Image 1 (cartoon, rainbow, N blue to C red):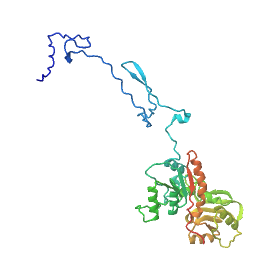
Image 2 (image 1 turned 90 degrees about the horizontal axis):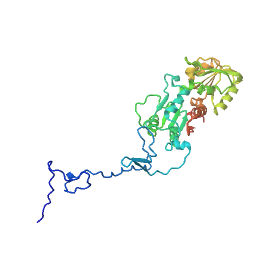
Image 3 (image 1 turned 60 degrees about the vertical axis):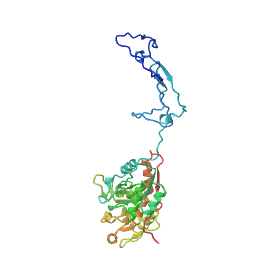
Length: 371
């Protein structure tokens, strides 16, 4: 027969406890409730694992690597050495921030800020659409910038082939408001490609026309200058504004002026409307320039010669009958030659940022060609 083990009865309060409090074992009974509490050695606290490649940062933003090399044992009162990772000696600059890689390029907002410092957006005509036209949602540094006079589909393909991060187009591709972005028109396709490929788009247009050392100052330098001033002065700053009215240093003939302008703009040909009762040997002492379309800016300006991209037919006739010669270069041909000048200006403005490549489009060209 199997006998069930019965636990020994507990000592009653009136019965003295036979167990000696200082004893390490009970000599009278096996009742656990009457055993004195023993001070057993405490196991050491578990050691934290060493980092294996990943760096954890504290809330204060400081690096917790390398971890502390000792831990305290409050029970024993001694410290225990923790294994230390193998380290290598580095230079002072690397040791200060061994896990930070210096990024090349500049943030988009930095580039836009520099562009606005050179030609503030408030210089633009009221009808114009200038500034940052496309800003990608994903932020990334600008490493490659493509300069162009007109952003056509051919130039857009070139920007894709160059892996451009930003396009600076003198003429704004987005001028009239877009009600939708589909694949039906070439301008909508350009906007769609820029958005899909995270390419920023900036347009300065008439800001560059008005600013000092801008497009009109470049065009005015095609002839030897004694002085130049804006045709339409800015009220807050008389040194800036649309067009330029210039005085030639010395005196040249109309024929010599034509040759100088062709060599300066690197154009094989141009259009010349000689003033009534004048010829190629007529002297030129003053001239006025307006890059692009000069109809509204040059109308009524007193000078011996107008230099612009295009003018209305009847305005050319009016100028000729006022003894004013007119040279037409085609609209974008009177602007495009400024891009190499601006590339050097932009390089100077971004000189503190490493690895920024600035290219001029090879596909950009005036749509009107002479055959």
